[in-house]
Length: 295
Image (cartoon, rainbow, N blue to C red; front, side, top):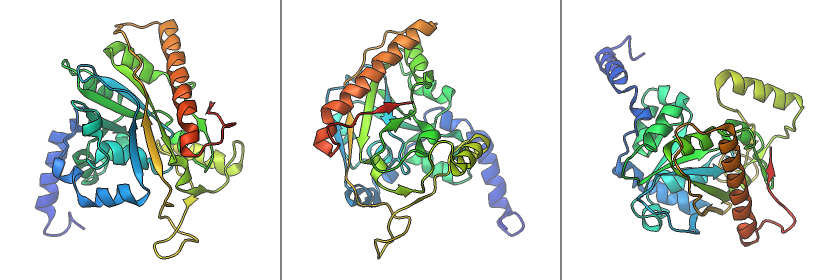
């Protein structure tokens, strides 16, 4: 409709803009503080509510790779804490600039890509992560949802399964760039929606996994509450989210890390993530007998 009406000139100019601006999502994006300060984000944060919890200082002279867990359905904690200015990231971690990495697919969507970059979202491509972590004077925090789309299919209330055992690419990038690793666990992230039962091996799960391989992103079948009633809808439940940022794991820069180096650091990361969870689980309503499950 835009092309075949009087707006064709606008479309032509925007296509030219896309051509010239195509690489920006892989080069640090283009954040706009005015958008990050929209009042709607304060209401979004207060709705659940969402709180960012600090357990250790992060020295801004270094770059950091922050691993966010779990994915959940909405990734509400990651968005609110790292793409808006209402949960106090700048006050808790002065001198650090967070970049939340998402699937490159979203930056191929006209107009939406401009909004995505304005809040601090950037591509999750290897080139993009390397760009963020290459800042010579430090101060950059690349936030990656490690479990990715696959993990969203396990986002059931009470589920503590993390897809991480085979995900070691972020470890390799951190070693090549000398970026310190920081585990993050967002308590309450999986409680926002109920998902249609889709255990491994079920026909629904097989369809979802097949679609994920084709399209690059998962499609969980979820439901929660409505706007004026609590029985059914797509509005998330009002469940508190506590995003706990762990202690940094120092990483020595290695230009060509070996498989043994990567495996050793990966084990250290898993241990630190498990420790972070165990130290905080009872504070945020997780039964003492429950533990993380790594797959």
